[in-house]
Amino acid sequence: MRRLRVVLWVLAVAAVLGFGILLLVNKRAGQGPSSPLAGFTLGGPFTLTGADGKPFSSSSLKGKPHAMFFGFTHCPDVCPTTLARLVKLRKQLGGAPDRPAILFVTVDPERDGPAEVGKYAQLFDSPVIGLTGAPAHVAKVQKQYGIFSQKVPDGSGGYSVDHTSATLLFDANGEFAGTIVPEESDSVALEKMKRIATSG
Amino acid sequence: MLHRFSALGLLAAVAGCSPSIGNPQIEVDSAWVRPSLAGSGASAAYVSIENRGSGDDRLLSVSTDVAGRVTLHASTSEGGIARMRPLPKGLTIPSGETVTLTPGGNHVMLDQVKRPLKPGEQIPLTLSFERSGTRLVQAQVSNGPANQQSAGHGGH
Image (cartoon, rainbow over all chains, first blue to last red; front, top):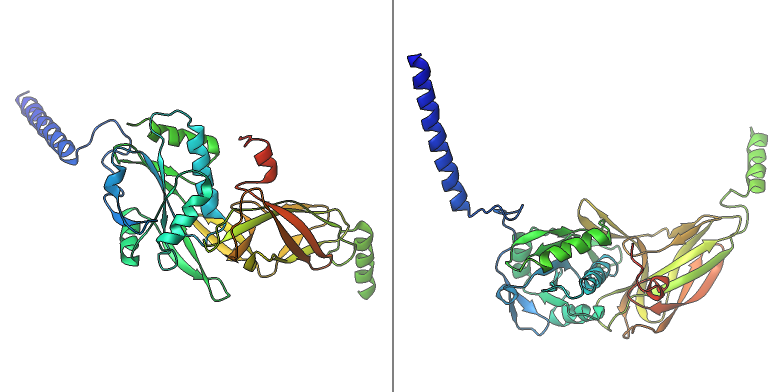
């Protein structure tokens, strides 16, 4: 009987300690129960070059939900298909409180200067922010955002670029809020856009 | 043995299912081209090719005077990675079938675009087939297939 009491006391102390540690860890990680991705970080601050040739800082996106797609202007099919779809979905949001900004970041800065990304971004009859930068800067941002790219010879002296096909979504607080992939239906993609548009 | 093979060949010819026997009958429809600004990378063209004939055919190449280089490509998106590869052997158009080039799949890549391609404009495309010769079509410049545009983006 005495032995059982000791065991119970030990268990109680362990439970209190454990709970305390859990609270501490949670507080340190800054986790809240609000988002399923809370505590998971992707992205972060960056400075690239806008279509006007001037620096574009991620701080200008503060408080604004945004959809970020990495591609290249010599991409005739997948990239314009993705950007045209994002523009279409944003139009479908109608009067949502905060319609997401759409960013196009080149993974081919050697060929895509500010003028090239700027012209490309203009093709969709709706504002798209075209971004480029020094190859080292772009590579750093790709790493930050988990974006793969690889040049592949096209057999006739030029090259194509294999790249991550997902669009990354960020809410008004700048928190990563998931992806839209080409395989998803428009209705699923629209729900995701709605979610970030009403996150503010 | 030889007899058996020729008998099979004859049977195939009668049934119309041999690629080298029977005549393809090619019709090209629903052509559209993505808008482009001169010097802004690349554009893509999409067409629908129907073969109403009894023999297979093959789309070998496409040409247009608005682009310096025109190539047939396939896009894929597998494992989260978008890739684009040339189709050096062209595209088979089986008898009795319609092959439609669509965004995210097979497409005609227009590179070195010489002048701006503005929405609503018509761009001539010449398609060369292995057996049917050439077909000239007018492709409408737009951000999506022509039928989808007129249907007001019907959606899913």
